[in-house]
Length: 105
Image 1 (cartoon, rainbow, N blue to C red):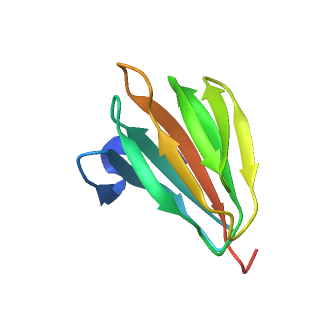
Image 2 (cartoon, rainbow, N blue to C red):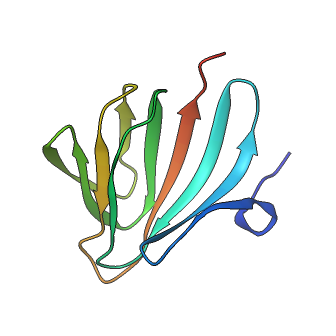
Image 3 (cartoon, helix red, strand yellow):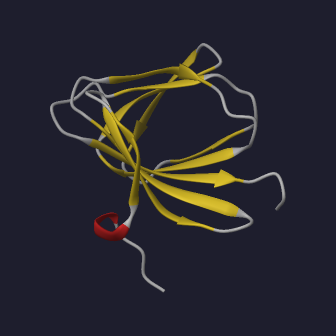
């Protein structure tokens, strides 16, 4: 099965970013995340582990207060309950595939 943004469900829409649920099953949720140029997704944490794969662009991912520079093709694994925030430091959109690993997996 092929899933894409055009048939996904918007789950985040604000001036900083857009999130589109591409697919969800009992093990994972797959979300396309687009962070607008020079925008920031405020600090938050999830109670489940998450994997990020940078599709396009670059920026900063702040994990529990530590700043990491990320760029295209970087893969980042984040444990449950770790505070994070995204900052797009560039003039182009930062695109990320978010894989949420559900508790029932």
